[in-house]
Length: 129
Figure (cartoon, one colour):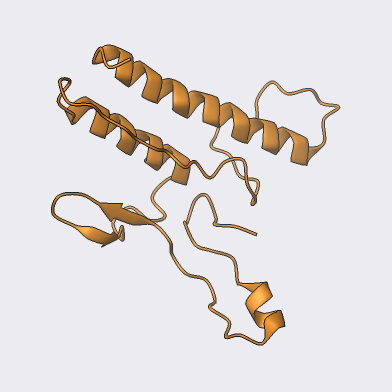
């Protein structure tokens, strides 16, 4: 299992329970790091779909970054990993013959395309592409 895409809470660590190690329970793993703060993003956790927040943050950084300075940015999207969750509108238009899991997985890949497209457009607007 993985992190819930909406709450940024991890699923219970069953492997720890099976191995005899302590159960860590549900923990938030959503962090913010900038010039003035590094730590848990308490104000942003559970406020929206995780990968949407990540892509919006990248766009903010691109828009604020000096064009004359090089920029390397690695974006580690969580999609398409379990749990299968998607924002509204990402499931529309898939064939009725598809299973629900297949539709959700395809919706997560569709969201990746949307998010990467937003980052790409921000780079183009800044002549950084």
